[in-house]
Image 1: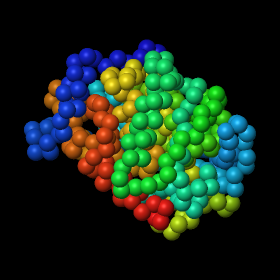
Image 2: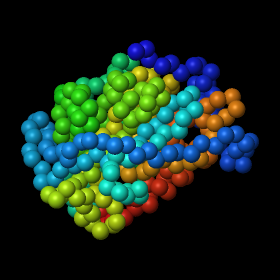
Image 3: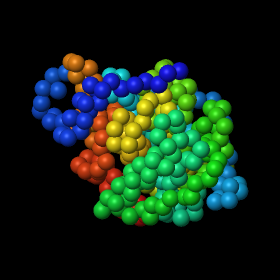
Image 4: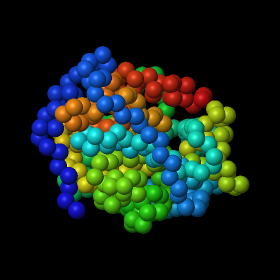
Length: 315
């Protein structure tokens, strides 16, 4: 399948928009408003045994299993579609809430870890350029003053790692190597699992896998009213052209997906403009569609992050 190519006019519009925030009182509000949907999708997957992967690629059994519970994805601007949250759980709750617990961590420390895939760099930029962009995104979240969650990077291995990729039939080792996993650039077909023709408009997705106990139940070990996250996996769509500060900017999308990896949801009202494309009020990293290069955390993104991580690990 040929890659989609964002028209230069659309990129120019994004570049101009990237220099300014959306004024919620502007005439954009006269356009068609679209609301992010929460989609419920049946998933016939059994609970997954967790094996932790050490720096030497050896695996060790964990006392937990995990279950895929949700996916959050960001969309291309020309699609006129806002990103969505997909809930896979059929446990009867329409308001599942989940976060990491400092007590039940698969790395056995309250510190948060992240990993960058070494074997699925995609077909455009080289691995080093993409990895550096992801590292900058991680450092940006780590640098928010209100929080201290001990973010550290796990060394890369020359192996494809990813539970969701494995379950969908792609070559992968189904294990835990970090809390937040940038699991690489996947072929277009991977994203059709999330939505009809998802390969044509989904840029990236973050999957959340919850810990379950020996009785098959979600757990809340720190009593915060949120089910405990085992890990998150982030995948990027190789059906698009990716750039370093241009096109679909790797750092911007990685910053967005890392936000999901750190438990933030989508934010902002979306509007379809008369001339096409989506505009958000307010403009934020955690908007559900790509609106151009954004590499700083401020405003609502900062507030959402601080609300989640401001008291860590005493949540």
